[in-house]
Length: 271
Image (cartoon, rainbow, N blue to C red; front, side, top):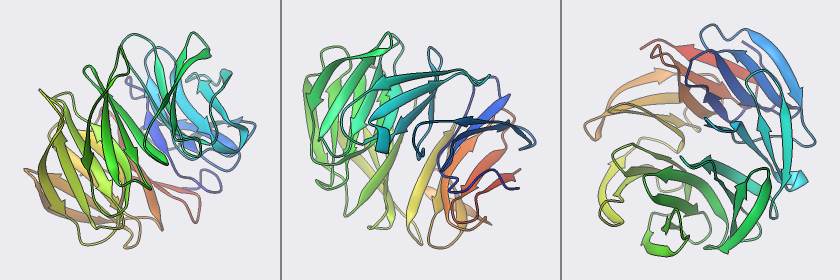
């Protein structure tokens, strides 16, 4: 089903009612079960990535506007100035939001609707994730993942992560799953008690979108139009997808939602 030109990032609210899809026009809100379009939320710039924060709703970095949009499931919008070219964002349990500023090599810390602090990180931060007391930042150009203390923002550790990392998703157990897009694999790290490499999961193409559903990891292959289901550290099933599947999310019912950028499509897979 068509959801808007340039459909890319996707996130689902915890209730499983609304899914938000980043598009060239802003954010398309759809029914998380059926994919039916509810509303198109116009934003000052095109959107690429989306995450969800219980305190702030959908978090949408607007790269060309140097802003973060906080969008409620009913379409309300708050805009916050960030660093240069914000690429990804993640919220924590205390209500703070961490935004990776891709062209500023920085992490903007947003609290109560304003950027309250900026921290230098490795060059060209891409994916950002929060797990426990750790903020993880994947830096695309530096090919590393960095762990920061969530409260003090002290850098705790840095690990090499592959040949071309892009996105990251974090589990409640403290594990990080980093898509090494150019390297063709998923790098798995533990953050407890410290950041350390655990496993490399080879993929048959270029992994891009990543999502967790309990013990299952879902990965899109942007060059092969496939969705991988990974369990126990190995690929157990492949599904055909829409063209250029850039992002993936899972609703509480267990359906897997995949966006196709080239044709502005949404696909719902019931595994």
